[in-house]
Image (cartoon, rainbow, N blue to C red; front, top):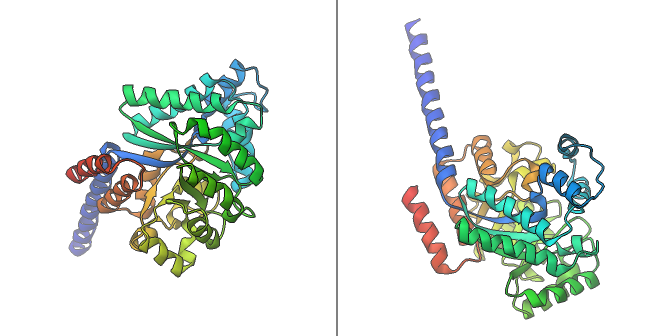
Length: 355
C-alpha cells in the first residue's frame, strides 16, 4: 500500500513537472519574436470580414450569415478548399478592401509577436475578375507601410502564379508586376498542385529571375517528391513551400540538407487538407531530426483554424516539442527570410537571449 502510494505520488510529481514545462514552453512561444514566411493574404479573410465586405460591395455570396461561412470551412482536400477560397475572394473589389484585409492580418501578427512577414498574394484571382493589378498591390502595400510605422512589423510581398492556369496567363501577370518591382520581392507558385508540375512554369520563372525577382514554390504537399526536384532544378527556388513529402526520397532529403533549402511547413493546414490525418501524425519533428531547415507557418489561417502562435502551440502539444525545438523553428524562420543579414542577426540574437 505504501509502495503503491509512493509510486502514485511520483507520477503526480512527474505530471505536475511536465505540465509546468509545457506551460513554460507555451509562454515562450507567445513572447519570442517570430517571422512568418508562408501566408496567403487572401487566406486570412476571416468570415466576419468576408461577410462585411460582401455587404459593403453589394456582392452576393451563398451564405446568409457568418456562422454559415464558418460551417462551409470543412474541407476534404486541397481542391475543395480552393473552391471556397476563390469564392470568398470575390468580395475583394477596391484598394481599400485589400488594405483592410492586409491590415487585419498584420494586427493578428502583432498579437502573436510576429515581427516580420513575407506575404503571398494571387493577382490572377483578382485580375481574372476584372480587378486591376495596381489596385490589388497598392492596397496590400499601403497596409504593410502602415504596419511598419505603427506596429513595428516589417513585411515583404511575394506574387504567386496560379499553377492551374496556363503559362500565357503567368507571363501576362509577370508583365503587370514589372512596374511594381519596388514593392514585390519575389514570385511563387501555388493553387492546385497535383497535375500541375513546376516544370510547366520554367520559362516564366526564368524571365522573373532575369527581372531580379527571387523565387519560391509550393511543392511536395499533395504533389510527389519529383515536384520538389523540379522546383529546385528548374525554378531555382530559394525556399520550398510545404515540402513535407520530401521524406519519401532520401536523396532529396540529402539535397535539401546539403543546399540548406528551407521548408515553410504549415501544420494545421496539412491536417485540415488531410495531408496528415491528425497533428500527432505530422512529420515536422522528423524534418527537424533530419537536420532540415523547417519552420512553422499558418498558410491560410482564417480557413485552417489558427494563426502562427496557434500552429506552434498545437504542434508543441501534439508532437511534444521541446524548448530547443521551438528555438530551432523560430530561428529557422529568420534564417530563411529575405531580410538583410544584419536584420536576421538582430532577431536571432534576441531569440538566443530569451531561450
